[in-house]
Amino acid sequence: MLVIGLANAALAAAIRRLRGFLIYSSTRIEEMRAGEYALHVQAEGLGITNTGGVEGHRPFLVSLMGPRIGDESVFDAEHSVSGDHKSLSGYTPTHAVDVIAFRNRPVDHVVTTLLTAAIIDEIGGIANAELREDQLPIVAGLPGLVITTTDPWPAARGSATFLRARAEQPGFRILK
Image 1: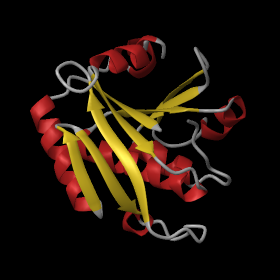
Image 2: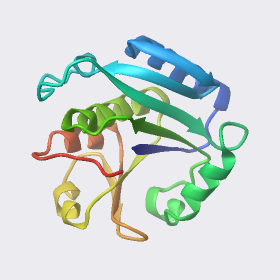
Image 3: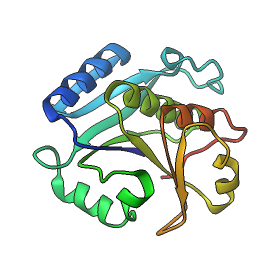
């Protein structure tokens, strides 16, 4: 799972852009509610050529949440434990988009990351990627990195450029 923090989301416009992008980029989509989508994505559709022999559609849940949309209590809980956003990223997120994979193969880690980067291209925001402590030095010099932190756990915040660079690292995997 990766989380995108959005600053001052224009909610209706963000939902329209997110929905339009997901309809275009998925092979199957079901709108659970406004801003929440169950979908299937083809790795090849995101430019992934090495699927590790895994074929077929990769299932995901993409969920926009925050004030007036989704489960506000989940949004509040996730953002209350992840540090001082303003001092770390330059803003306090008003909304978030969770990108959740339902499979855990190496290709799913790459698809999750590149799907998250593509969503950022569409609606903006900064991704929060939890890390293992030994991954901090690996991400330190990557383009698009906004900041790394170890409080309350190791994490990196970065742009779509950061996510794409991170996905190219040998042995790449995301946490959660």
